[in-house]
Structure formats: C-alpha cells, structure tokens
Figure (tube, rainbow, N blue to C red):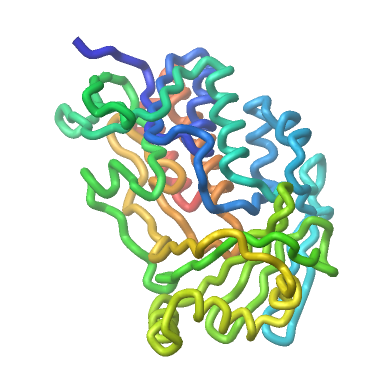
Length: 347
C-alpha cells in the first residue's frame, strides 16, 4: 500500500524548496521529491533583491548573507553606444542589495532549510507518473534514480509542480506549454578564472553588454571565477555557427565584438567546456487546476536579460503556498484560490 501526504512538491530547486518550506511553517505535512542529489549544477547565478523578503519569511536570509556569496549592489549595462548603472541602493528598507551565487550551493541551502522547517525531503527520487481522478491529480508513482528497482506511490491532497524546465504537468499531461517566438534564443556560456574585475558600475555588479546580434553577461562568483555567457537569437546563432564552424567559434567571434567583456577575460583561463541552452522562453496557458499548481520554471521562464529566474521561482512559490494555505484554513474555496493564483500569472 502506498503512503500519503497533505502536499506533494515535485522538485527541490528554489521554487519547490520555498513553497514546501512556507507550507511546513504553517504546520502542513509536506513531502518533496527531487530527482537529483544536491548539490547539483544549475545556471542562473545573478539574483534580484526581490528574493530577500521571501528569504526572510523562510528564516534563511542571515545564513545566505553570511555564506560568502558576492554581494550584488546592482548591474552595469552597455548597450551599443550607451551605458548606465542600475543601483539597488535606491530601494527602501533592507533590500538594497542581492547576491551573485553559485547555484549548486545556494539551492542546497534552501533545500536544507526546507528540511529544517519540517519538510520530508527525499533526494534521488524521480516522479514517473501521476494518477488522476476526474481531472484532479491524486497520487504519484516514483522511482529511486540510483536504484530503479526501488519504486513507490504516494497520494496527496494537493500537488505543487516545481519540476523545472522538464515540467511534469505542462509537458506530459496538460500539453499546454507555449514558446515565445520573440525569445527563441540560444545561450552559450563557460566559467573563467583570472577575469579582471568590472571597473565601473555598482560593486559586485553583473555586466550586461550588447553585441550586434545579442548580448553577453559577466557575473563574478565567490569562488574566484566568472560566469561569462552569450545570448543570441537562435536563427542568427545557427547561421553564425554554420559560417564559422562551431559553437566555440561563435562565442569567441562575438566576444571580439564586445570590448568590455573581452577586456575582462584577456589573459584569463577558461575552465569548462561550453554549456548550451536553447528555446528556454515559454509559458503555460494556465498555471493551476483542480488540486494542483505549477510554479517556477515548471510554469514559465523568460529571457534571462533581467535575471528573473529565481525571482519568478520564489515569488510564484510564495503565491502558491498562500493559495493552498488559504484553502486548508477554510478562508477561500479552492476555485477562488486557483483563480487568484492564475490571476497573478505574470508573477
């Protein structure tokens, strides 16, 4: 016989760990299934100040403040002949900064915090199927990734899909993910050591600098490396790849057209092979239904120009936790809660 939980969360990234932690703080029984074993690699290192109030609610902000991540006081933009600083110091209260993070470490802190708040966190457990009763998800089958002979089933009252770009509900069952044609881009990045610090902009800033057919990011990290990536329209990138003869050649050709970032990496050592993501800007037609919510990358993702990934993850998790909590407490009906959640669908 399978087991049961009040709320099942699929995925242990910032969206899943935030939603699970907030619900556990409300006294709910929450089980979180994560297919990977943390720490695990993830892109999206430049964080916005909007995450700080959520970290406060989770009780984890002081731990992240003290961890040693680069303190991000803003951003520097260089777009064609124009350049400008984006300073966070105009924000009121205690939110005038953020972080440049190594995501494997940042995400692990959030997931460990969820466990400390009472979430039953299970890593290396992958959800394989979801069973429905009249359109409502009621149970999930799972397998242990390290030993696929170990399987199980868990029933639940509410499901939160925080399964990232894989998007269990959106891609396997609802088939409601739609890609944004204007942002069908390719991102190519690597990590460098010995990069010269950005000599302008706010302290700890991300540098965002344009090239004729895209833009570069350069993010300083606390381990002494920089994340340096190129974003370009997919069609243009493919044309350039075919013309030049490879992904690495496109990257370095574009870098030569970006004097600011090229100057920073001059003399630096590239540490890793190039990593590639493509067609990552998408949205689901709806983010909720009977007994379930989709949050973070499982629901939508935007072009990374303004570093919205972790913001969308944590804010949608906050809204999702509030919606489920309100239903359980009897403050609103489930229909009202999901309508509220979908109404905030721009997050």
